[in-house]
Length: 313
Image (cartoon, rainbow, N blue to C red; front, side):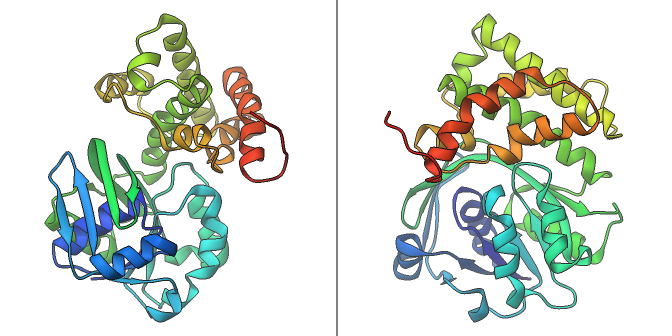
């Protein structure tokens, strides 16, 4: 398959690297020092699943240089999706699908508004990874997985071909029976983790060990669960319990990407995660007091990182 990776950081770099290593025709769209390193030296992935190198990397800064592809893996941050959807028009042919791998729930709709729903495949993934240096991805935690599906939940030829490609690459992959449930379950996992991690600046091993922060996490989980059910999403009955079981398996030093962005004064996915819980709760009149507190607490830091307000720290 001809696969374009848009957003070649921790997510796109890792999964694109695995696909390229398995022999798929992968091209990375990147920029700056990261692009130059990919072009000059290839892609280095340092991983708890085994380090590897992709020596001959196809990489460019411009989607127009790539041409039409079979699949676009959209690995940019959630707040970058609308702009990215416009930029990838040159990659889109009649059968091209765009797989949205962002945290949050709104990316499929945002891409559909630009490119049409027929080109969108809802997706999610999981791992703790980031750019350690230009051309160098570091995967430090989590069993990497990818899940995706057509928005109407039918199993298509294109999703099955992509599933087989990921399977050949050794990545855990699945086409869930209901992609909306899968997206909300990922949202249930990542959003409380991101919020509590960012507001406390503490890694998973700390916030899950203190009774006070465990209580906050549990309150967040119940808020997301209630909002999902009010939006007629059929989450499993044990959704909160199973999420806590996942939290217990996180590495003690594990941090969420939103948390790292806040701590390092970078623009974050605050609106797409914490803010989305608040907004979606208001739509169905479900109170979300813990998320509201976290959102309001982190908003000044996010706005500062975006240059919209100024203050010293």
